[in-house]
Length: 509
Image (cartoon, helix red, strand yellow):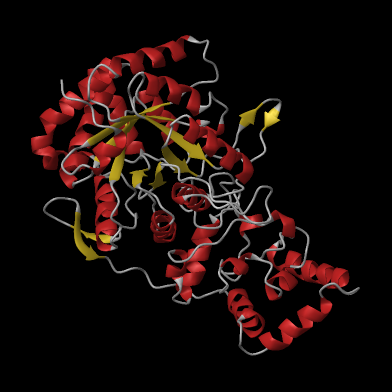
């Protein structure tokens, strides 16, 4: 038997179709389910089918066994672990500390995710953290890969740490229904890759045309990183859970659910294997670098069965496409449909005309340009005034006046580091449940928030406002640094003029 290539080797090697499998640990190592996982790992280590085994981190917002525990056992068995690493439960200090530990243990393969909003915990719902978003975290790890420089002001600072060989990926969802929900996903992907993502894995979906759309988009935009498609092994029970909307960012139609139930009635559990094998064949035929298998029970012979069937079906993958076109009729597609294949042509669809920008947005944009654009209009006068107020007995009164106005207009949370100018005058601290600064999470459904389903996603609204003035691609460019908690409660206006807010990271030295 030939030697199994590592996950990194497989994903970099041309012509090799990478297969990864996702394990979902429970809350205890003392249950029978954990013993099944260990048995799965032992069996998988005896052949070369899997190039990596990923381990989720508190999936669904519920507490579970930390992924590094399984990661150590998987590595010891001779398989390559890929640890999910989310932003929802740890602040930036704990994140950095955890990354040092991962490096020490040689657990370098990471899948960077925003993370599901925390749900049930000990004696009630857990507090969400989201101190960093996925783009921030990718940037931090990239800095560690190059050799992390400790700030001069930090204890023991002024030194550069040795490089750490992390290999990190990110996630994107092409399975969004509306233009204003989809394109911010793609624009955030630009930011993730610019921040150092080495590979990309899709969200779960059952629309072959959407899978193909992402491939075409990355090709046209020059996003040259390997792409793996998620393949969910979905039985009737799981399909019903997804149909009810219980899995953030994943959907199926009533028609698709009916088909799943009908197939399982006829074929039993094997129906889910056949469906997964068909989708694997399609993704391989399209040109995906590999697949990420999830949802399957940790029974290794089942995975072998799925992969063997996918190999048999591969020569006729195009015939299977009509079975995987599950999206609502009004779904926005970035590319025109290919009538011959059922997939996409490389010609982009015309997008709907932008709606008119809200009057409040236009007024805020005018005022912002008047006072906050360096070198323009009233900026020099405001700058001089800010220098006089800062540190004077009027600073406290000025700060109260600022926040009185901004709380009324924007539901301001007094962060002291205002990003309204970059976010179409919508506050991410008060209007995004996760406080995300560099694009949406993947949990929205039909343009509405994962956490508060009655509220439209902040980034859908930001996109619509920016599109109205021809600036929607602002969401693709640049980078907003994480919130500086040292500024909380101070005047964001004074911090801006005196170079203390996030703009200081972009000022010439």
